[in-house]
Length: 441
Image 1 (tube, rainbow, N blue to C red):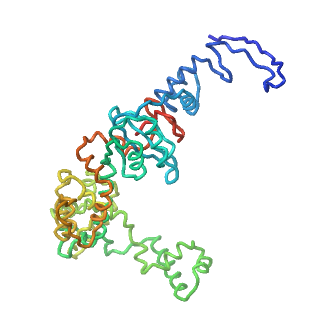
Image 2 (cartoon, rainbow, N blue to C red):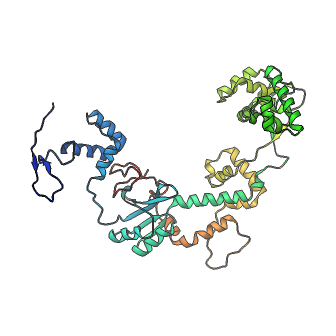
Image 3 (cartoon, one colour):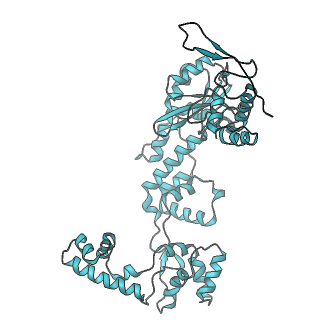
């Protein structure tokens, strides 16, 4: 059904009025500069309130009202804001990036209700104290270790208890442990006598690679090396032989032509997780490369049978398999083993971590709980480690850390999830802080 509405147009006789004519508005139905009725505007506001931009635009299209996501977000921004009169009892404070590395804002969360309270346009020491003075009532403030937030709470809400959030504290601890592991990274490499049982170092077998492509590679390699050894520039060789400069450079810097003909190392790396299984099956008498390929393929191998056949070539030769030293774990891996709960480590990770701590007592100290503060005695001062420096950096925030220990974990729900996005209240959208309703994800 289509309704045609006819309205009157009036003329203004005042010479100072910028509008010469204006149309009549029907109260409750039309509004100036709007192409939709007020009831439809209210419907779009409800859709945007619950579904936000893209999802709301899809629902509106099904209701025969085509709007864009930006239109819905703009409609939400036009709604009158209802800022809270008082601050929540447990207030969470964290920053978020409007433009990472350049522009940051501040998101305020009601920890008890799990709902957003307000979004501030920056994270300076002037904006947040002004908000606290306008909204008194905060008894507990959960924040990160930023000095601006700490000073703001001390200035505007001196009676509030400040709590350091667990997320940033754990993040700083992991970074400090990583520095300690990096300082002792030489201890991660196992000694010569520690080898993996019956693990073969895969390499290209003795049979030479033949074929038309191999013959062309040998011929080009000989020509390039002959001219390069005489001092001819790479550009001149490229023009003379009509070959790409990158290919000429690769041939000129190669030690032997066999290195150019060798299979890529990627297939060897892909087979490394199944090396022990392949060697065990070989010792059991299974020498069929196709059968071995099908067996490891069922276990998750994504390579080709040709890679398996190349890997088995040294086993077919008369030489005995060469045991390979166990690869040293990376710094990030050891950091994860040290900071993870022991129950979440596998038996292999437990064993490797035990060997590392036996070789490096300094890393073994990281796994023990120690008293970080001595009231009666002067602490000993050996050469400072990264862990000592990180612990010393926590001393200014000691009251907030103590409050964190005796506070339930729910007091830090806003930390670590500081990317404001859509919520059931009111999305900010388009990277601009709204007056309220900007949720955290």
